[in-house]
Image 1 (cartoon, rainbow, N blue to C red):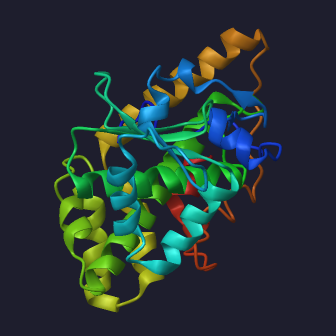
Image 2: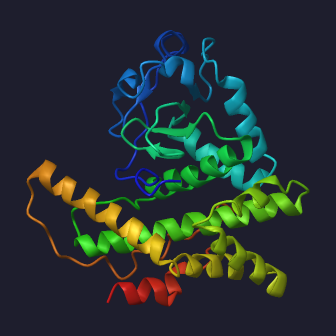
Length: 286
């Protein structure tokens, strides 16, 4: 999950309704403004590479592979129902990437797609789908990069949304393991720059058996890596200043509202694991 593309910048809106014939004929797709977009600009083989929920696409060569990923996700019914339901609501597509850009998976907010590299094995793809679906969920709730605030505040937001994604991923993998499907949980520990997060979750679960506390410990652990903070800070600032260049706006220096993160860490089951109360979020904003 590269720090370059794995979080979103703009809110998504729903497409205008299309008839079944129109959907089947041209696989019309919605961009971030709710307007029709041409997915051939993402990949000239998009018809063969993208899976659209509730849309018929007989020439898609990757339908079986993508539905297998989704089937593994659905073994945990509560979280998967919420995340996949959100993707369905926003009419997001799931695509197979084959171009060599060094990125294993990403959520492209411009094209409203979640993409994963074709060469990865099944459970790594499952991890990436879960990761990017949580980002999609965050974007739908307003956690997006904006020029309304200071660049350092956008770094602060980036850290928080990445920490939250990994906390949710840890809980998702743990739940699957407890249900008798340990593959995703085991595969998480193959991620060299993130495995300490999942270890923190496991230690807390074994000590307290409390999912909310374990998620908060995983969230806090995200901030303990200099590599993560350096990588995501660099990416966030780069994106921020690219937006300034593109828009020709004058930089603002406003702070995020005090209550900004209160609802960031609401789980798919409606509980809030309290990341907004951590010193990591509060201290970084000072």
